[in-house]
Amino acid sequence: MMCPKCGFKQPDVQEQCQRCGVIFAKVHGVPEQQSEPALVGQKHARFGELLKKVLTNIPREKNPVVQSGRMLVWLGLVVWGVKFMFTPVSGEAFSESYMHLVNLPFHEAGHILFSPFGPFVQVLGGTLGQLLIPLIVTVSFAIKGNLFAVSVGFWWLGQSFMDCAPYIDDARAGQLMLLGGVTGSEVEDYHDWENILSRLGMMQYDHLVARIFFGRGVLIVMTALVWGGYVLCRQRLKYCAT
Image (tube, rainbow, N blue to C red; front, top):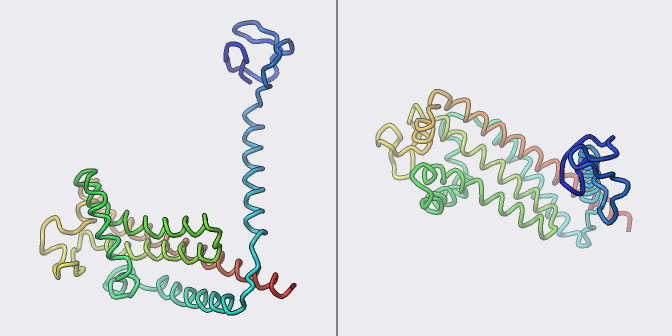
């Protein structure tokens, strides 16, 4: 505990302060200091209550058409997500997908957005922008209480992580066709992740970093699908119960 008079931190079993000698029982008007384990326990309890509230207080969807539409969207994300999970990291498969065209403008905008923070952050900003926008979308839906839309935004974030993986994997090879119709090996300092990893002295780990990104993306997509399915099931049960 902490002495209410001098602020000296000491074991909870003490009856008086080891520094100033004040007797804790005689101190009035000062709230009793809680021990660190008690504070940690309270934080865990509050988190558990919040998690329980989120999992149980899912609003009922009154419109069956909207509910059916969400189910179709979820099934589409399941099929599309599984397809991305089994797509090879190496090669052009990701860059030829529709989602790559969705991610690309935010990637390029990230370079501009982060340009005031120096050359290195500007180069890294492409990847940051590509990941930041889906995250903002997810948080926005969460604030508005649209729990199913949260799963869609989170799915997009996971897919964006996977979409980054082939670019990272290509850092040393420089064989992927980049924006402008050239490859990283044809133009010096043109490949984002060649620059990033070389400046960090991690060029030899390009394949490892790529698979970390890909694995994280798979985990996020799976989490999003589980959450989306859970929300739909809860809404369906509440709809049938009325």
